[in-house]
Length: 91
Image (tube, rainbow, N blue to C red):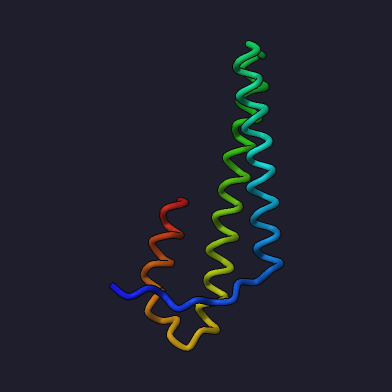
């Protein structure tokens, strides 16, 4: 199977994705600390929900960015099925 052509990624989208992932990483560290220190479960669950939401948003932003790139790439049509699978994997 051939490798997809390299596409220049949108630096602003990349920055946003990395920021969201770093935020999720920090939130996950806080959840781990809370569980280890026997914090109230309500606080841990709220923080865990925030981690999940941050990861979902990062994933959707990745797919959104990929869709924009595919729409501008001359051979983008071949990736539509893959993008659909990726999008649905976040649902």
